[in-house]
Image (tube, rainbow, N blue to C red; front, side, top):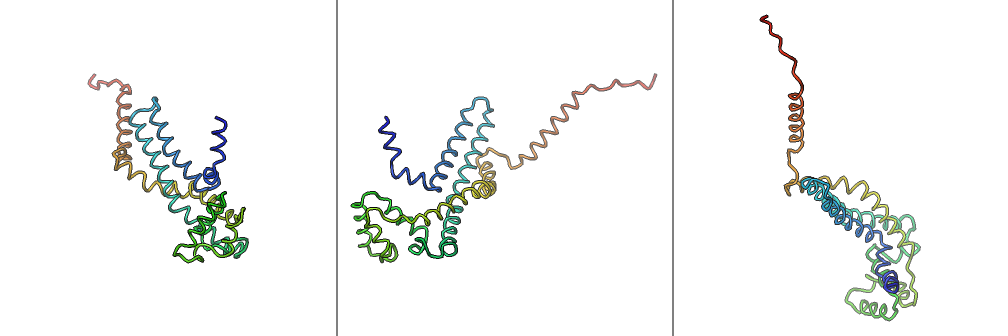
Length: 228
């Protein structure tokens, strides 16, 4: 049992996911979109109609936030942060001079993280033999690094990308995504038949009805016969 746990904990793929902000946030939000509605549905103390509405709304909220985060916020903040670091903060130094985009660095880093130099060189040689020009993937410095036992990982580039992801996660999930999700959630609930378009008017009508019922329950003053 201990050996199995140790194997899982030392897995390189799992380590890469844990160190990647986008992957971590994506997995967390996915689990929330499944777990939170699930807990609502199994709660026996909630009215069935209320439970169904609340679970659907929670699922739509988490799913919408995840989609906005992955397809809008991450690309904007990740690529924007990289360009800011490359062109302004580091000015093509500390490893930034070797990469023109986040995609190029991610491709290189994935290969550099491969602990087997044999497998790494096999992949490198295969890519270099491809029709795509070498300069589009690696320059000579990067090729020389990948041939080493412990290639340079360019920590400043990695740090800039992860910092951008972190800022995007905080601003995106806490501010941008929740606001943007409201434009989708209520139309989706109405499409599923879980929310009425005139829900506000219905609630107001119910309040008026309850008010009238309460007034009718009030004891009425005795009528005075004026003919006496």
